[in-house]
Image (tube, rainbow, N blue to C red; front, side):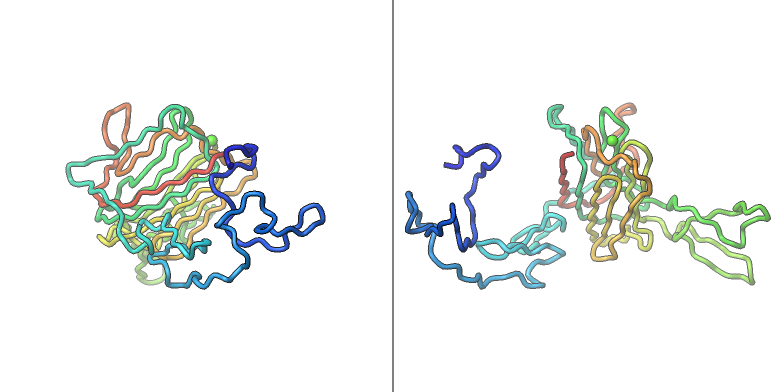
Length: 294
Ligand SMILES: [Ca+2]
C-alpha cells in the first residue's frame, strides 16, 4: 500500500501512535468500525504508555527517546553502543608503526553539507597530532580535529604594551602558567600545556578555530569528543565538560562544505608526498559522522 502513495507522502512505515477525534469532511469516523480493510494493529483506546525515559536510563551521555514501543537510547554521539550505551564500541589501535584510515567517497556520493556531526572516543599520550580530517577534492573546504601544543588565540599582557600600544611580547592565551616576580615579570611555561584538542574548519572564506583549551586530553584516559558544525558555527564538547560554542562574525560567511571527498583518521594523508602528516599514536573507537545535505 505504501508503495502506491504519492512520492511526497511515501513512507516505509505506517503511523504509530495515538489518534483522537478523527474528523473527515465534517463527520467523525470510527477508524476500527468504518475501515474498509480492518487491521489487527489498530485498537480502540489510547492508553498512556507506562515505560518512559528516566534520567539514568542511558549511560555515557546517550539520549533517551520515547518511542511507541518504549524508551530507547540513542548512542550516536557517545562513542558507546548497546541498548543503554554502556558497551565500548569497536576500536582501532594506531601504533608506533604509524597507520592511517583513509576513506574516499565514490565520485557520485561526494555531497555538499550544511551541517556535520562528528563523535569519537580516544586514548592517547601524544601531545601533537591530527585525529581526523575531512577534505574536499574540488575546493579548499576542510574540517580538522587535532591535538596541539599551543593555541593560536593570541593576546597581549598589559605590561608588555609599548608607548604605541604595540605588543612587545605575545603569549598564548589560556595556555600559559604565570609566575609573578615583583610587579612586571612573568615566566610562561608553554610546553606543560600541550595536548589540547581543537578543531579548525574552513567553508570557503576563512579558517575558524574552536578548542578546549582549559584541559589536556593526552593523559592516557578515555575521552569522548562531540563536534558539530552548522554553517560557519560550531559546538565542541569533550566528555561532560562545558560545551564550547563558536559563532564567527560576518553575515556572508560561507556555510556549505563543498564536495566532501576524503576522511582521514589517525593523521593526514598527503597525496602529493604519499606520507602521513602528523600521525597519531592512539586508540580510537566508534567513529561516527553524520552529514546533513545542503
Ligand atoms: Ca564552501
